[in-house]
Image (cartoon, rainbow, N blue to C red):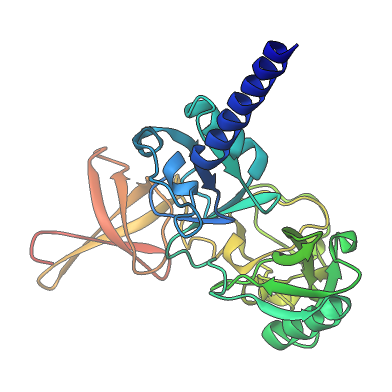
Length: 326
């Protein structure tokens, strides 16, 4: 009996020693809640928070790619648990990995969409009122502010907000809300929809590419023009006689950049051409090879000789043929 007790005691002592050694020596890695990047490739080591991690970052993490960000994205989110599992696989379970947030924000360094450097603290219940005033101060009192996922906002406590800086207005804005719940820091994204309603020119019927726009093709309609205020028409007369640079659906907003002034002469048109040699003026007829406006140089073909010549479009219409030295 004595030997059995000693054997059990020895096993317990050995188990305690092993557990103690494991808990004391097992390296721990902490993940960041935000990663700044310049290249499109992000390595596993970029996700490790050096301020909280007390051990050396394994070399293999510097060579292991976790995500490749598309070149046209300045910001994206990753699931924290997925990143932690990926790093655990790379390290083959030799390290313990901890994370505090549900998602990790990836932010391109120097991006115009970069977030403010610090979070603004505010009582959670005041977030909608604060953000509505913030957006109206930024974009004007006539902007309508709508929150698409109000359930994201915590009902009580203190929250920290981070609002994107933008050089160009966007209809959708994502605001980060950071708060503490059950001794854990959580980060959620609140989506805001911005609108500015105006009476603007829209297509009354389907307009095809290259068509000349007439008065019967257009009407005024109340539309959301947020973000394109400088590129919309508010008078029908400003669009009449212009040429469509794209096809328009019924009810689609007619933008200034989608219309061009029609050419003064068009390809295939036969016009008079002339050339001056001293006091002598020689005329002929040419067929245009391209559209042109007054003052533009166009190519054309002599009707009689078939020779390709170049000339300047003038009122008439007529073509002043270019010769060497003219």
